[in-house]
Structures are given as structure tokens and as C-alpha cells.
Image (cartoon, rainbow, N blue to C red; front, top):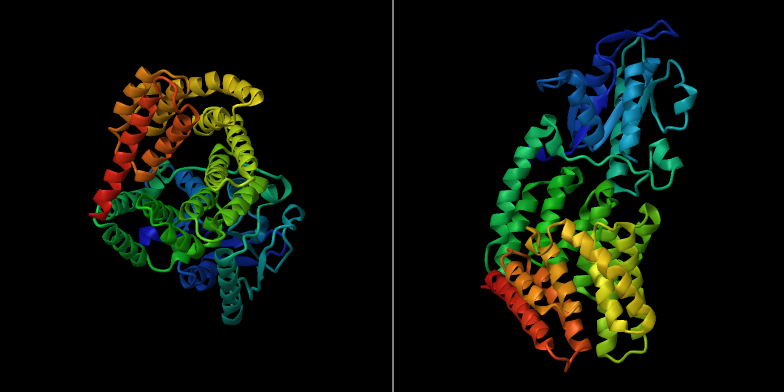
Length: 465
């Protein structure tokens, strides 16, 4: 595995020899690192980084904070109650709910305020680690790391444990030069994955992505960004079996992330095997319970309910009205959670039109200007983003502004989309068409939906050629 693809374990500890102020014992922290902490990290197949061994230029604090915020694991040695270590441990605890492993020498208990933290003790003899103590510390660290990787995830940050929906800190590697090796590797990987996705037929693309995934080695220790890039590449070629298989083998902290779980729900819905949609509904509702409302989560949940509504309608199943209501509720809740995200809003409008009663039409009147404003803020019909243009297109069709709809269609067809994106918009337009069948001008909606379906078919045809 390329070192830049390995998950990082940053070590937050004193350097050199330091005297413990309470016991007066001089402790050789370099020896503790070299004899136990670093070997444990290597055995766990992670990349070990210690602050005093950074080879980055610029301000040292930038590198240190970047590692604390972004490293997959942090080991913090609380021995001697070093103020720098404790400050840095506090920074880490505000950023990540888990994968922080405190340790301390048994020459004294840690301060009261961190007694709640699950720390690993180790024994010293005359300020140094003996062979038995080193072996014990290595085993304990590896076991803790492996438990964190395999799951279930356990919150080791007091802030995340005490405060529901504590937001943490999300930051991109691109924001700091410290991770330039990862950024370079990520860019190279993205280019390789793009080339793999472009292969035809689809089976060749799938095999090419498989090879890239296999080359990364043990998925338990692959950097999160690498796994997500591969995960989304499978989505792009509609290899939903592979997406779900990859999710099941991801390390627990990555599996617990909102993005991974949202895309699992997406993949289960699109695969639609026995029990898939029911599992997706359970997973997404659990995510909402744990992390609160989000437009993305509720948008995917709304899509599952919408698909169940469409299936029930075709089958003339009596549950049809219930699934329609659930879809409208999820989409509306998603838009209200994040009004700048127009995707769930336009779907709530479309489905409320399908329902068609007075209350539903009042919702259409309420939501339409809000969703339109959100889309216009992103560029409207001239946006450089497909979903923005598609949103204006759907709103135009819902509002019978077919000239605007035609202009949006021309622009929408210029985007190099994944096939399912064209299919999603076409599906929404087909719902409008079925609702207004026989109405003057509705043939424009039918023609637009047909063009989008052709674009999706062409995209799939290129993949299967």
C-alpha cells in the first residue's frame, strides 16, 4: 500500500526526557515512543507521526493542529500532566468523537477532569519502559486500535458523549500543506478512477475499479478519502453490489460517517433486492436519530419512499397514499432543515402536485417561491451545476413555463452526468406528465423527459459498449 493511502496515527506526547513534577522521576519519552508506541502503530498497519519528527516547513503549530483535526487516530500520553499535551487532547476531543487513545504512566493518576477518559496505563522502571511493560503497552494499543477499526464505534470524546449532536470539525486535507502527500495521491487516484469508470463495457469498468481497490491493501487501514473515492466510483457505474460490499468491509469509524451511511441507503434503494429498501429506511432513520436532520439524509429517504409510492401505484396497492405522504414529509423536512438545498424542496413540490388535494396545493404555493429562490441563488438556469438547472427545469414544468423548461433542458444535456441523474429528473417529469395527461402543452414535458431518458440510455450504452 502506498504510504499516502495509509490511515495516520498522530502521537501527542512530550519529547525527550522530562521530570515528573510530583514524583521527581525523569522519564525518557523518546524511549517510550520508540519501544512501544511506534511499534504498536506499525503493527496496526497505520502510519506513525510524532510532532517533533514532522518534516514540514512553515509554522509548526499549523502541522500539529492539522494532524489533531484530521488524523484517523491520535495517541495522547498524559504522563506528567504536560499542559501542551492536555491542550492538544482538548482540541482533538472537539474534532473527533472516537479514535483518540490516551495513555499514562502509573507513577500517578491522571487529573480528575480526564478520569472519565478510557486511558491505557503503562509501567515504568527508573523512568524507562522494560521489555515486559513495553510488550504489554504494545498489545493494549493494538487491541484498542483494532476494536476501533472493527467496531462498534465507541465515543471516547467527553464532548460527543455528553452533548447529543455535537457538531465536531470537518476539514478537507486540501486546506493544509501538511497533507500534501495525501492530496497528491488523492489526485492521482482520482485520475485513475476516472479512467477506470470510462472503460467499456461496464464489466471492464467494474474490474478496473476492483483492481484499484485491491491495490490499496487492508481496507481497515486505508485512509478514509481513498475508500470514499472508490465507493463513489462504484456508484458512478451503478455497481451497487460492489458499493454495498465495500461498505461492509470499511473500518467502523468510516462506516459510521454520515456520507458512507447515506450512500449505503442510496445503493440499497437502487439495487432493490429482497429487504434492501426496508434496510435502507432503518439505516437512514437511525442516522437521523443520531445526527439530526439533514437535507441529504432526508432527500435519500424521501427518494426511497417515492419509489415505494411509484411501485404501489403501479400495483394498485392500498398503501400508495401512505408512501406518498411519507415521501412528501421527508422531502419537506429535508428542505426545511437546510433551505439552501433545493433538491428535497423541488421533490416535495412535485409530489404535492401528485397528491393534489387543497392542503397539498397550499404546500406547493408555499414551497415554490422558497425553492425557486434557493435555485436562483446558485445560478438558476445558467448554473454550472446539473442539479440546479434540473431543479429550475422541474419547477418550470410544474409551473407550465415550457419555454424556460426547454432552455433548461438544452443546458442540462451539456453536463457529463452519471446516468441515474438524468433518470431521476426524467422520472420526476414523468410524474408531472401523468398528472396532467391530456392538458394543452403537456407534450413539451413528455418530449423533455424523453430527451433525458435518451441521454441516460446513451450514457449507459457507452458504459456497456
